Image 1 (cartoon, one colour):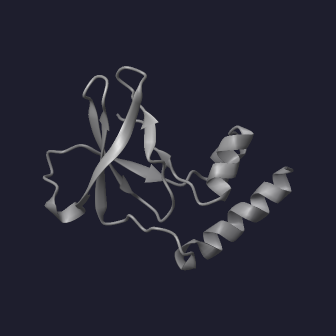
Image 2 (cartoon, rainbow, N blue to C red):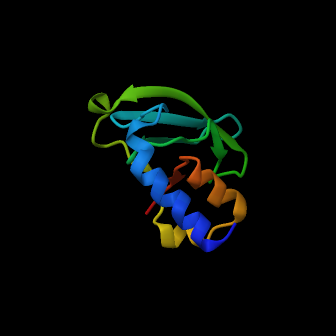
Length: 114
């Protein structure tokens, strides 16, 4: 796919995303748990988009599975919540072909914890 094709699809996605018939997780917090090491993380949607059911565990390298969804208002401020976000066009252009396709199909990526 050429840079221009990616740019056109990315801009179309931005124009269409709010009217698309996909799950809108804004206002929720999801818990992911690792069955191997017991690590947990909590995530939320910074933007409307799609996210995976499983993600790599940053503690042990195994997989974390989405196990529960909470209303954002019920999650205490002490719980660290990471954002799923849509990268900029410039950042998207630097990604692998598979990652670009994920983004152009409405996919979000998880921020790196600070």
